[in-house]
Amino acid sequence: MELPVEPLLVRTRSSTRQRGLDDAARRRNVAGAFRADAAPPRILLIDDVYTTGATANAAASALRKAGARRIEVVTFARTIRIR
Image (cartoon, rainbow, N blue to C red; front, top):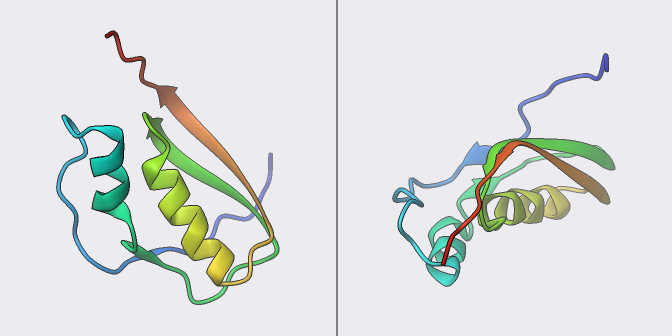
């Protein structure tokens, strides 16, 4: 794709493992866990695994605060929960 790659996010604090947490606990676990000092208006955010979207949402929130206006998310794997 020949897109520029830049590390825009910094972890502001550690968080516990997401495995075994329900959706609400996952959101709380990563809320405010990222910071971005500056962000271009359009971003392609890459995450390894999408389970509930909590991490991608927390990262996107930090990027929006830093100036991003359009954020697309790509993941390498999607978990499926069997209930």
